[in-house]
Amino acid sequence: MQPAQKDAHTLIVEAIDQGVYRPGDRLVESELADRFGVSRTPIREALQRLETQALLTRDGRSLIVASLSHDQLAELYAVRTELEALAARLAAQHAAREEITVLAAMVEEDRALLGDPQALAKANRRFHAQIHRASHNRYLLQQLGMVHRSMALMAKTSLAAEGRGETALAEHQAIVDAIAARDGDRAAQALRDHLSTAFEVRLREEARGL
Image 1 (tube, rainbow, N blue to C red):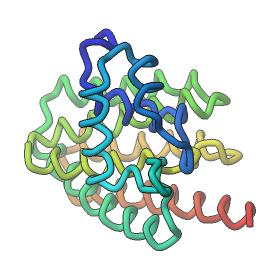
Image 2: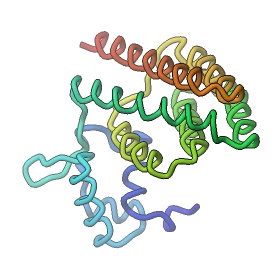
Image 3: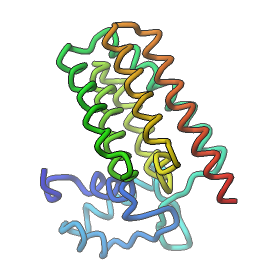
């Protein structure tokens, strides 16, 4: 899909998610219009929507990319963990054989990305999105979409921590194995364990930066 075919809201969220704009960065309507090659009206509407969604916040008259406090981060992980665990449970029940094959292939292909945290982070998002789709529950997908928009506010990926990439892929494999076995309880628990470890790593890295 070419950038011009995406709406302004999606373009800005993706730019935040990819680290083009980081927490605290000021977003200027004219600059965004030039960057994405769209008129200022859809950019203005997208900025208003992003402010409503709490991805942007006011700094005087300017809009800046919001940042997550320690408490907000914990709250976000709590909600994400339960929603994603439900997605894994439903995927174990409803995923087509082909969807499970794709998930397994993703884990194998992502091994080639070890050592490149940003590429691995992008692949990680694809992997989780595939589980979401495999749940075959449109309402859950809507809620997960909201959560993952907020995840874009995290300044850096936990996969940058030493050794995290290898352990994350092992955890992904455990999730896929449980889904393939049609074991909803084990799939949900494997997903919870995966996100619990990711949160712990992020907190440890945050503490080191204090």
